[in-house]
Amino acid sequence: MSGLLTGIGYFFRGITMLFQPGLRRFVVIPLLANISVFVLIAGSLYQLMSGLYLDVTGEITGTFSFLTWIVTPIIWLLGTLLSGYLSIFIVLFLTSPFHGLLAEKVEERITGEALQNESSVVQVALSVPRGFLRELQKLLHYLPMAVLVLIISVIPGVNIVAPFLWIILGAWMMSLQFIDYPMDNHRLPFKEVREACGARRSTSIGFGGIVAFLSGVPILNLALIPAAVAGATLLWCEELRHLR
Image (cartoon, rainbow, N blue to C red; front, side):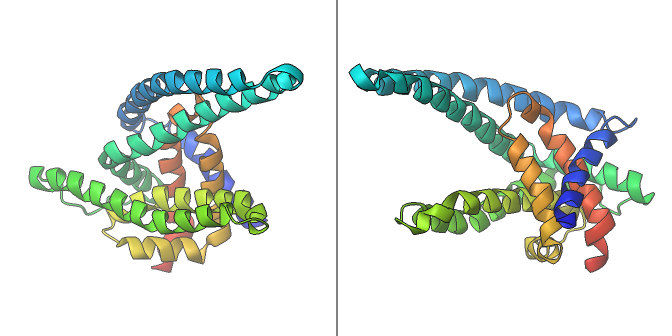
């Protein structure tokens, strides 16, 4: 339990770091990107969910009409959560190089040591496709586990544990997603990211869990990414770096 609470604490400590001078400018581009993507996705899903709402409620008549009071909030809550999750995923993929820069500056602020990365124009240009490649590695790691949980979700009797598995899987993937940024700055392979998070599993799950939860909360999720990057960098510096 203490590990879970410690992991949650790293996220909120990350929020406070964003207000420090010299870090705020690294928050602006991901924040603007998240707002733009969220508005586009929310608008598209609104049209989709409106049609779904009319179809579903149109089938509920007579004695069961009271069910519309239950179905309505569920449908719109689902649409809101989907908007948040999809916008977070797309923004993470498109703006990954900026998250690496933020992680680098946060680590330098924590340790007082400058990272020895090449800063030439060629190296900066190469960091963009490398960042996209890392995002694909995370996706390929996630998909087999997601398919397995999806299969469990449709098996009668066994599917009772499916909601808990989805929660744990979401927390695990969010921890890998953000802890990868400071570790990638040290050119560590994704395999080592998984091993480091596994060595501090409860702390990583606690951190990833609060990030996964807030990613589905409208408005709050718009500022989620920079705070999660800063919190993950704190976790890397204080608990994972010495495990290499």
